[in-house]
Length: 245
Ligand SMILES: Cc1ncc(COP(=O)(O)O)c(C=O)c1O
Image 1 (cartoon, protein in one colour):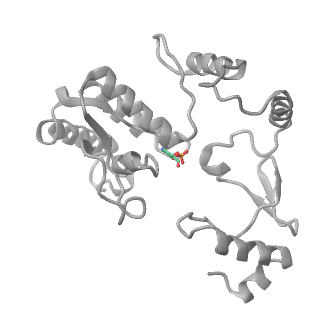
Image 2: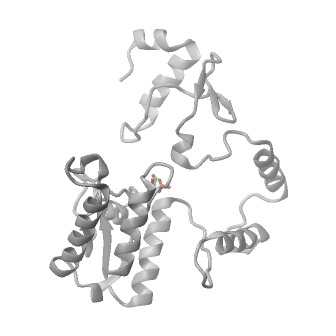
Image 3: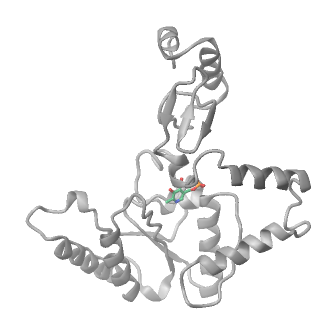
């Protein structure tokens, strides 16, 4: 709960009112990285109501690569809402969905025919990937990796490989989800080279497929590497090796 002195220290009357409203009307379960409240932004800079500037290193956690209020994005958004707002593709189709599906299908790596389904959130996309994999293979098991994060819905919580804060107190979770070992370079024993360490985790993954779940029962193996955060070389080596097992 924010205190009066903190409100005085952090800005003027409007900040205090908004901060109080935030505490009154928004549950604590919605985590906030800090107590500042943005008012407007341009490119990589956000401003609060007192025109204090913040460099936005987070970009809404890696989803705002062109920055805030890019002129092309603003123009496209205005053009769209003036044309129509939300027909609902399953009610009546429209060109934007089809054109974007074509672009994403062509951009996605892999030399094979691809199709695109647009969903509301990351968690919904992961859940649908699991549904598609289960239906297509007729198998049930889902393999994810320790420390991986997949979302806040029930299925994606089950898939998430970190208990606190994401899963703690929220069980029971969906069954048939198996957590495999994943390289954690930060905790790599000093005496081991990077290559040896990654190889040792690949060996553990091989063992996991013998001791925890049989490959014949696996519908999908889900890995969500974020190349802007994670270490590329380690991911590449582990990804290539596990794909081959
Ligand atoms: C790797 C990863 N997977 C899934 C999600 C879930 O996405 P969303 O919050 O849009 O449901 C996130 C983001 O929070 C994420 O970083």
